[in-house]
Structures are given as structure tokens and as C-alpha cells.
Image (cartoon, rainbow, N blue to C red; front, side, top):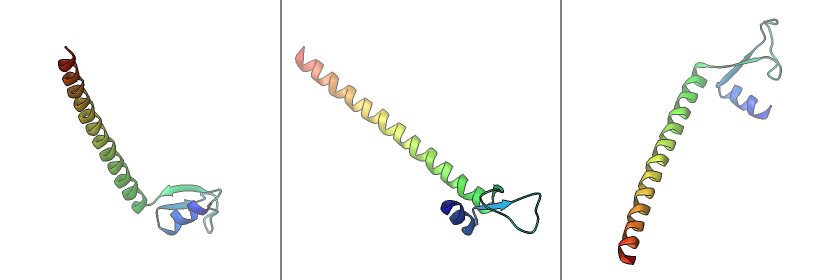
Length: 78
């Protein structure tokens, strides 16, 4: 509940009970992303993609370095 209240206060989500118009109960009502919430989720998703892409590039670079190291050791031991 604490996180839901923070998200509600920061205008990330809103709660709405379609059967009761005048009030809502954040624990029981339908929760929706606000416009700001959609924009924040979009930003988070893009940053996550960027992190995974950079990690993938780092892994490829490390594998290449490891392969070069193995080739040097192989050449020395032959």
C-alpha cells in the first residue's frame, strides 16, 4: 500500500472504481497509469533496453578478449 500511495501522490497511477463515482479505495479499485505514468514507464523501458544492449556489447567484447588471450596461449604452447 505504501508504494501505491507514493505512486498515486506522484501522479504515476490513478485509482477508479467504476461502480462508485464519488470516492475510491486504492487497495480495491482498478489502477491505471496516468499520462505521466505512461511517460515514466516508457523512459524506464528505454533505459532498461539501453543497459541490456550495453551489457551485451560488453559481453561480446570480453569474449573477444578472452579468445585473443586463448589464441596467444595456444601459440606459445605450440
